[in-house]
Amino acid sequence: MDIGVLRRDGRTDPFFDGTAAGRLVIKRCEACDRWYAPDAVGCPDCGEEDLTWADASGEATLVTWTVTHGRPAEDGTVPPPAYLALVELAEGPWMYARLDGVTDPREGLPLRASFEHPDEGESYVLFRPAG
Ligand SMILES: [Zn+2]
Image 1 (tube, rainbow, N blue to C red):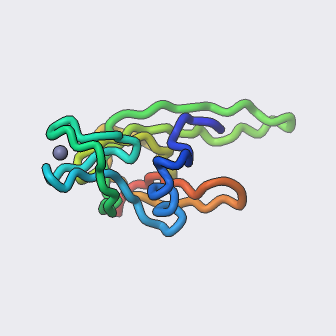
Image 2: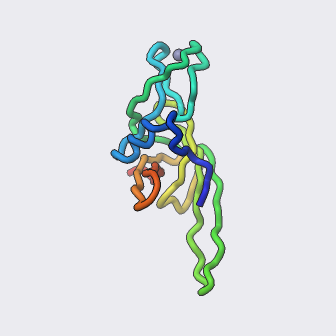
Image 3: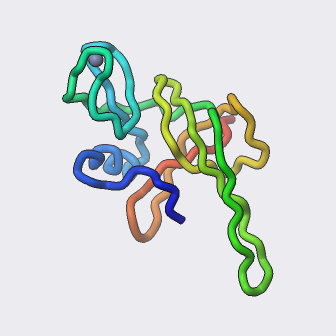
């Protein structure tokens, strides 16, 4: 399923190196002590273009989400709905990610980053209910 999340393109290598190692790595402006989403290209506060990468806590809250209902298979089985969410990381930035294990999504739901390591393709982050 293509949900339009980050792809490895050179600029985002540290992010995917992080997810492969089970770490959520996002952008940070050292000058402003502010955090940014992994696809941020610069700091809007001070104009710094060379943001550093740093480990985030992996804690987040749910901001909004969309539900994708898959097509029933030929045998009639219906895949579980897939959630694509916008989450607010504890550090402040917002990012898109899949949800997992969420049956009753609501705004502000506490989440924690979890990492999937598919046989093919990049490891990726998804968020599960915290606690
Ligand atoms: Zn800055």
